[in-house]
Image 1 (cartoon, one colour):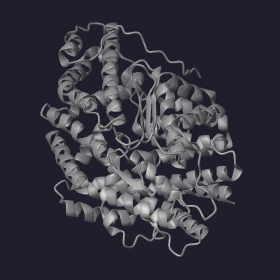
Image 2: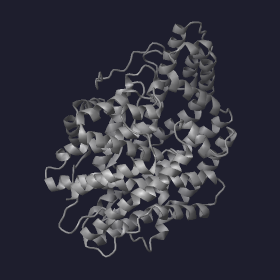
Image 3: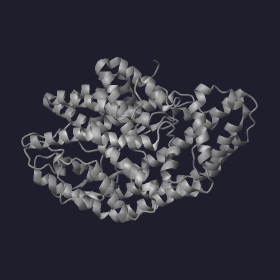
Image 4: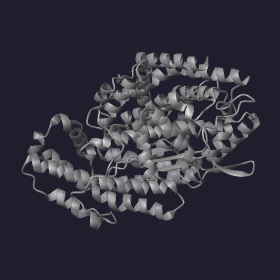
Length: 574
C-alpha cells in the first residue's frame, strides 16, 4: 500500500497561488467562471471538476481556520467577527452558486460518461444537495451557523474555584479522581452548580436552534428536522428504525455490563452506595493516573506510542507538529471539547483539545490522532469531494486507534499496575459510552419530532430518557436538579445536531477491528488503512466491508461484541 505522511500542498491551477479570501467580490469571479464555462468534452468536464475541487478546498480551509482560531480564543472579538463575517457574508453567497454548479454537473450529458464506479457516491451526494437546496433557507442556515457557536462562548467562560484556585470545568474534572470523597463531592456539586448558572441562557439558545432548524426542514418539504437531517448527513445506508433498534440493543446487552462495572467499582471503593462523584475514583492510597504533565509531553508520548504501532501513524503527527497544528491544553476562554479539523487544501489537519493531565486526555489524543491519520490517508484522493467520508467511518478511524494503541501505552505508564489500570479504564469507557450515546440520540429524535415542546416538557422528557439508560447501581438521589440539565453539556446538540449515533455505530466497528487486531495485528492495520484510504469514494457498507467488518446493528451482533469486551475486561482485571 502506498501512503505517506510527507504530504504536499498541491499546486494551484485555477486560483492564483497568492489568493486569500478577503471578501465576496474577490471570490465570486471563480464561481462565475465555473458557472459560465462551456463543457463540450469529457476531458473538459474532468478539468472543470478539478477546478471546482480546488476552489472548494480553498474555501473550506479558509472557513476551518476561522473556526479554529475562534474556538482557541472565544474571548477575542476580532476572531469571532472573522468567523461571523464568513458565515453571514460569504457562505450565503456561495450557496446559490453551489446549487447551480451541482445542477450543471447532473444535467450535463457527459456526466454519464464518467467512471460510474469512481463517481457513484459523489454524484449521489450532489443529487441529495439539489434535493435539499432552498433559496429561502440560505439566511436561516447562516443564522444557525452563528447561533450554534454561541454554545462555545457560554461554556468557555465556565470556571470554578477549588482550594483558592480557578479551574476550567475540564481542569476541575481531575479532582473527581481524588481518594478524598468529600473533595470529590464538593467539586462535583460546584461543577453542576456552575452549569446551572447558565441553564436559562442555554435553554433559550437551544429553543431558538430547534425553531430555526424545524423551519429549514419544513421549507425543504420535510415533516421534521430529523428526516431532513438524515438526508443532509447522507444517511443512505440506515434509517431511524435502525437507530431505535440500536437503543433497544444497548438496553438489553450493554446496560448489564455497565451495572457489572459499577458493582465492581463500589466493591473496590468499599462503599455502601456508589454516587456520581465516585465513578472515576480510586481507593485510599492509590494515586490517580498521571500519564503526562503538559500538552507537549502528551504529544511526544503519543508520537512514541504511534511509532510502535506503525511508524506512519507517528509520522502524521510529526508532520502536524512541524506545521503547528496542535492546541492541546485547557485554559480559560477556550471553547470546550476536542476535535480534529481536516484542512482540505494543505492536507495536514488541526487537533484541538482541553488536556488537563488526566487519563481521559490520553484517550482523546489517540482518538483525534486516529482522525488525523484518516485525513492524511484520504488527502491523496483526486477531488475534494472524494475526501468527504461518512462520519461513521471517520469515528471508526478514531475509536479503533484508541483500542489499537493500548498495547503501547507503556510510554505513558512505566509502572505495570498503572498500565493495567489505564487499560481497565479504557475498556470500561468503551462499554459505558454506549448508554450515553443512546440517551443523546433518542433525546434528539424526540426533540425534533416535537419541535413545539416547552422547556418544561423538554426537561421532563430528558429525565425520562436519561433514567431509561442509567445504571441503577449509581445512587443519584437528591441530585435531580442537576440531572434535568445534563443534556446541556453535550456540545453536539447545539453545534452538530444528530451527529452522535455515529459514535455508537463506529464503536461497534472499532471493537470489530480490535477483535481482528487481537488475532493478527498487521492484517487488522492493513484493513484499517485500506478502508480509510478510500475516503468517501465507496458507500458506508462497502467501507466496512473493505475493513472486513460487519455493518450490523442487530441485537445478536451487539451481543457478540459485548461478550468479547466482557472477556477482555476480565482478562485485564484478573
